[in-house]
Length: 456
Image (tube, rainbow, N blue to C red; front, side, top):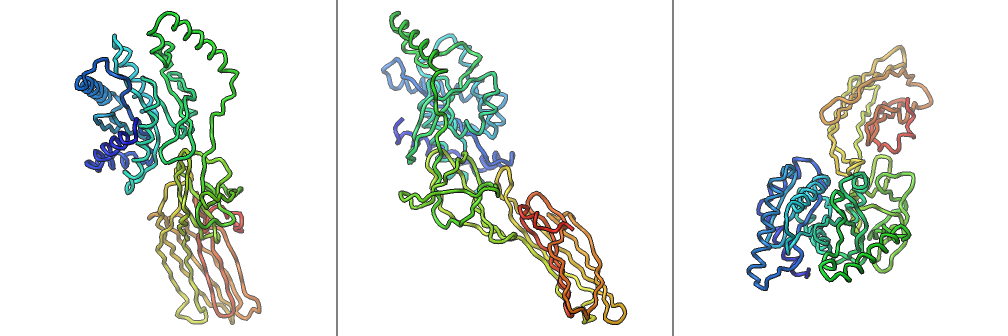
């Protein structure tokens, strides 16, 4: 398919989405998921008639019947369907709904007595989107799906390597389908080819891709049979390299220790790439959303979320600082006015989900109180209390008492006393007392540093 035709299809589809963007936004937010599987259903084959008007009418009828079939499909409520003059776009959160749609169309085709001169070809790509950049994220993925479908033999579902790697465990366990490596494809504006995989309906009889050869003379059919037999015999002997490395180049400031997806036991490794003037990551990275991060302190982290797709990924580093909250009370305990001190801090912090790598904004409230009780002569007793609230709920509460002689020549220190944790961060406090001041700090640190806390 020519690039200008693909461009026109993409523009047509994105115009449709834009015209009712609320519908697409609702489809995303209703499931609270950012991953979409994109199925493009195109037309392949030529009409037997030379009448272009009749051929176009035939094409439109096929698209109309296919669209109607999908609309009345039992899983249609889980799909978002757009129809154009050149094909049908189907969006789904669950890849299983794409497969079931494919099998549904396969069932529909099997019930027809005569083969159609025009038939369907299908390609699937995936995309990670968010509300603010829906169309920007969708456009290249739609283009990929159209390019993939253009490779397809009719009544076959082709999927990108990214979709295969995400769903391979599910696909390989599904007895209704079979899958094999089909072809390689270089997407527009990308230098490296990527693998394309073919999904077929294993419930049907053996179906040979090249139907044309079986419509020829008997000698051609025999030749085809010998060729297919040879291929079946040779397939187990072939050593096929299924996966090709994804190229990820980071441009900009790259600190000494940067980690991928919070794997703090092993920082990423890279080499300088003079062609792209950046750092080529040497580890294998799967397609999808990831998080790069490095730490300045145990409570200051720099983060960049990245989306990796098949082929070249040139990423300009633009680190976002994520600093956690700290609250404190610092009083002159010789002053009676400070003998009942209270401090409350309201703040927020941002972390990334360890599975979806979506940002999570947490609201936090520190509520600290210190009460000073004078004892005999220069002795004082300090009672300090703390409450920590997350997203409006009380998470941690406690208190402690310390007796102190103000004439002591040594200061009192108690560092990093553990208070509690969630899956992303932990809380601790520090106490310092000298001959004049009482200081209490309650702070938040990233969970990876929990081992340095004294766990008292």
